Length: 442
Ligand code: ZN
Image (cartoon, rainbow, N blue to C red; front, side):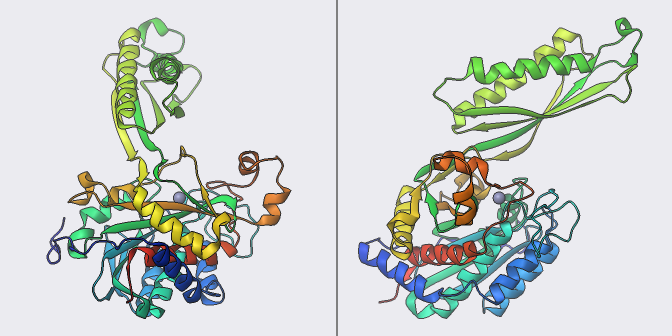
């Protein structure tokens, strides 16, 4: 928390209203009315501008300025520089709950290959995860809720979050007083684009996304001439054994009922064929869906790394560092029911589908987590909006959705190109969700 922390430290007593079929239907119908044709014109231009000028995590200066400008123009009290480049905008609209809408702002170190006329102009950087879509939907929803302020009561807390890709941004904003300098929300809502067909919204009550933990291991050997290994401790050989042995964690130490992935994604050592280096480094990524399993896997990694170094006669124990840590995304069932029912009313029952838990990860849950948000648990819902054009979806090889999902360009790939129709859909989905949680007008 910083020196700005002051007012509004107590949570509002108002809670999110009960959901009834009528309330859900009203939210869906009102959102459709407020967001009709919203993806056209200025909003599309805003999206294409963001897409053409991507910025990496925690350096979203231009992006944040554009987002703040649009939110300020819409009439929201807008603050920049929260937790680095974070943007916070408030719309106070009388009695009712505080509803937070969050979009992330960062792009990825990927070279774009979409060939789109508005493709990235920044070499080696691309909005390959669709965070430009999220910001555009956030602006569209905020503008719609300003236009429709007669239809609801409460406070809208609109958040543009930096640095999602490294799991630092949400914690940085919370650490900079997001919930003390600004009203603490009763509910937190967020959405992500994915490669499902455009027009679909994917929900899941409870576990939706996995925890992800990056671990760096530094192995200390004793370097020397490649012709006399007997005078050295070769960290390359130790690293090789370590990588191999780590494969036994999932296969031999974790129950088949627990979903875990352990990938050693990077290994670095040495400069030349005839030099034994002083050290080797490996970096691994662990995905888990249960806190106890995560702890057990981390303990196994630590034990194996230390034991391999001992076995090799390393002069020092390894340095083992957790470099990034995403929590499990576990949606509040009541909030998912409220939001998905309203979206069903907005889009029709077949558009809203249930997702299976994913191995991907998000830092969004930190906003809800009591251990991180400076108070008690805050319920949240996070959902996916489809973005693959129907023509591409139908042309993709495979019979069922699972095969087609593997065949179309997905998030983090150089050809990920969301259909602009996903913008309109995403604006309506977010507006609907907000209205479902705010106080309906009498
Ligand atoms: Zn993303």
